[in-house]
Image (cartoon, rainbow, N blue to C red):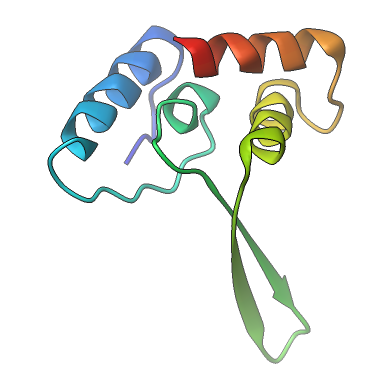
Length: 93
């Protein structure tokens, strides 16, 4: 749903999805922190495969885990004080 967008456009899409979520259920899969930060609820989705079978896992994130995941999305594999601060700003917006 957010292929080919980034930055300010992603922030607008996130806000529009949040508004839509006020009156109906919306579930989106995204790798964009600007979109993920606008959600009312945040889930972490992962998958495991052994070559023969693939399993998908979905975990609801609490406030602390959500902050960590947004920081990871912002900074890649390394979560730093700066990415955590940026994640806090996303959640406060």
